[in-house]
Image 1 (tube, rainbow, N blue to C red):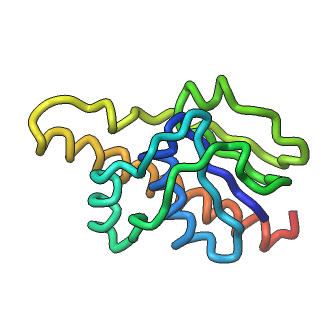
Image 2: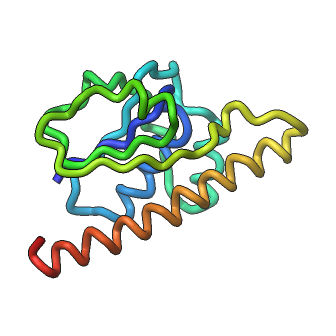
Length: 142
């Protein structure tokens, strides 16, 4: 099974989702991409994932067209990506997780860092739920 986490810039949310997925969905082919990818993964995304002992420092933003096809499951993490999401023929499932973009957070450095942590924690919660659901589907043969 191939899963794609799609965001506009592929620098924060989708990269964090990919990191959690690699930890939780070990038998899946896991990708993240962007509709307009940034030049690098945001350093604060790398930092907050390291707090969870997940290293995403070697991941890099990719254009959605660079993802191998077919994709079985697509998760969009922002409204722009959901609106600009190309069709994925053969995708068995799509989900939209509308999450705020931590890269747009403003305020004192600690406040911005807290926004990154909050988004990370929500992604982790949703990834754990997704891992449980996919295991249940596998167990029942669906």
